[in-house]
Amino acid sequence: MKKNYETSERKAIRVLILTNNLRNTRSLERHLSNFSEYTVEIGYVLNSAQALYKLRNERFDLILLDSRFGPDTTAKDVVEIFGEREVQLPVIIVASKPDEQSAVELVKIGAYDYITEDNLDTELFEKTILTSLERYARLAEEKRLE
Image (cartoon, rainbow, N blue to C red; front, side, top):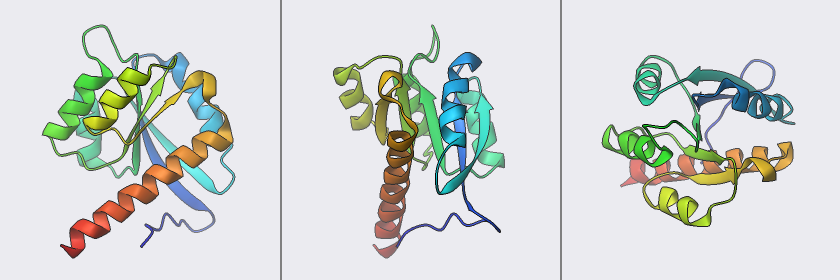
């Protein structure tokens, strides 16, 4: 069963972007605003504590996590924190350059997917997000049926 993201006019997806560099979000914003079937509503946070607060108080469908998160906290740290706090949303890592080893490690500990900025076009980005949302909905349904 697919989760329904309907609004009154177009389908909507709420995305939380976790980055400490707002310049990096401009490219993500541009691609998200060009999605063909969805309206994307975006929230921003600068650290995992802000993310956890926002996730407790607002509804989001997906988290985009900048792999260059910060000097003291890595994307791996954030994914682990989300796992410990039982954050149940799909997390997609957005990396500045390909790093297959990091991608595999992050997916093993809970990230849903990994995409690189140099490989980022609107169509691929939309497909990556929709695939993650569908996987999340399928897993949630399976858990519900257990």
